Image 1 (cartoon, one colour):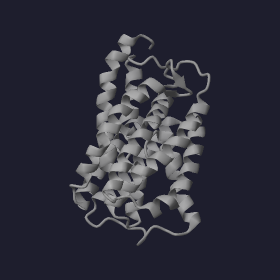
Image 2: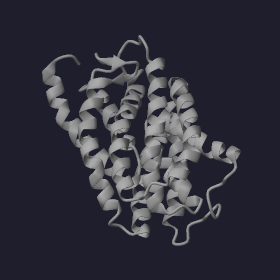
Image 3: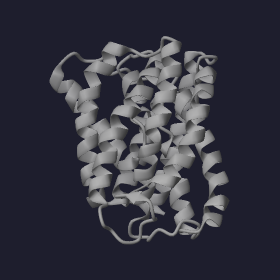
Image 4: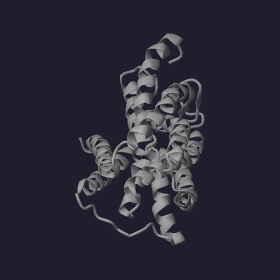
Length: 275
């Protein structure tokens, strides 16, 4: 895919995807990758992006991770202005997420995508059922203070999120709500977690994809820079809109919105894994 005319055809699609992903990022604290990854992969399947099938999913995930950086910055800034980021919670989980994301990014090339999709789908459906429960299950009255427990929770969230090319909110928001964390603060704090996951994950994908055939020009490892830049334009601009919508919803409505989003994502992942 080297001709400018091809990028001119693809750019409007990527800009629309970025707008949707950015709005979801602000609304739900997710990185937007759950929208970006499937679309990028679909563009390779239909031949609009000339990426080899052997590396297509890794290209999609890695490129999505790069877009999470500007998206998280925009979303977190808007949430901070609303006072919905818990700094102490961020400080206690972020280091372990970084370590997990770095490990996940490095080993992502060796992970079976079908297995990963299946596990994600199953976990997502279980979480959705709990979030839609009028009296959702709570595993604790407050997030644990133990360093080992924090590491056991935040590390896998970082690793799994980096492998899937998604921001930390997809997994950290339902996890925090299970620990009796207010949903608005969970969404706001998760928007900042996305940045901690994206940076080390990007390093891993950049290292793992060096000198591989079948990738687009202007790629660093698995990451394609032009696609990431185009998507990031609208994710950055639309994330604050999602934040405004989130703070107009009460806690129950926000939980339902997140559950619907996660349910659709989980069902899609399960269909990819088993159908």
